[in-house]
Image (cartoon, rainbow, N blue to C red; front, side, top):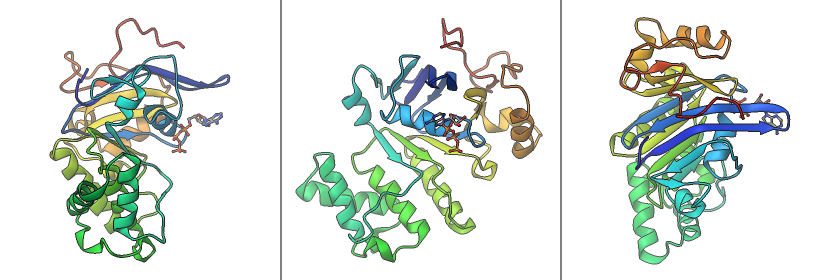
Length: 268
Ligand SMILES: Nc1ncnc2c1ncn2[C@@H]1O[C@H](COP(=O)(O)OP(=O)(O)OP(=O)(O)O)[C@@H](O)[C@H]1O
């Protein structure tokens, strides 16, 4: 359990009779890049909707920088930056204007908003594009701008839901590098993807399949000598139940099956 990053404990969610998430437990500490790797339908978007307060559940607990999202939603959401799968920029406004508008939504105005806009553009290598209409930017730069926008209120946790969808290889690599840099600077990052080549050996990795965490830990320790793509395909072709423990200690090297929360029986 992390007090300053993201802590998800025993979370479940159903769409009517359809179980979308069950017993999901995952901690992302400040300074860590966690890849949430899952095939289509694994439950990534459902989890993001819970993390961003769009959905709620009575099953399990989500804390952001120590704030429980069910008990203190405003405080918890104030510490989260989100990049959704679908872009939500105003194409007719300049990059700067988009950022100032978003800053205002967070109650940040005037010179402080200008300062923050310049700061986040600088962090994403976009400073020289501030005065351009968003419409002029290519897909990769629009994505970078959305990440900059998600940082304007200085969140502790950054969530990205398949942020490289539709981008070419060079733009994908640039975005992936930028977000790893942000984690190195102290953010807790949760990056949902179904692409194994976006995951580095030093990243934290959580494999989600059919609503359950099948494996969680440092990527290098989890995959051993097996290529990640093969490990991912092997695990997600297997029944979605706890498989085996990779290390007796669990935490450092990681487990296949995920951390089990105390008292969670895994049934909603
Ligand atoms: N509104 C809904 N009603 C019923 N079932 C749903 C609904 N939304 C999602 N599901 C189901 O819940 C499960 C998880 O879906 P979710 O969209 O969270 O997965 P995902 O990992 O984000 O997939 P993708 O990568 O395709 O977006 C899937 O089986 C999906 O069919």
